[in-house]
Image (cartoon, rainbow, N blue to C red):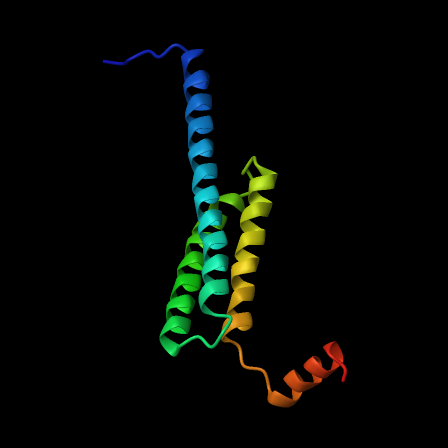
Length: 124
């Protein structure tokens, strides 16, 4: 037995489904972005003045998890048929912000290089 589905119903159903999924996806991206903003506040409170090794380790784990989730989101936004260019750019920029946090908070700079930067920024 075949079930006949009227053709006009199909496109409307799929358009609504696509719109619903894209809306939910955009909300997920927004929530991820809010997590990154919250992390920046947490960094200001806990990393600026002599963080403990445990605090730095917790930070690194959090950044790594946020990057992993961002890569998951980017699998969708980088697809050639993804319709929302602004959302695609938002995901890419947020991922780059997260990647930049690793050398900023966890990188090691040689003392002479750090001293040269400080001297150039704050001449005596």
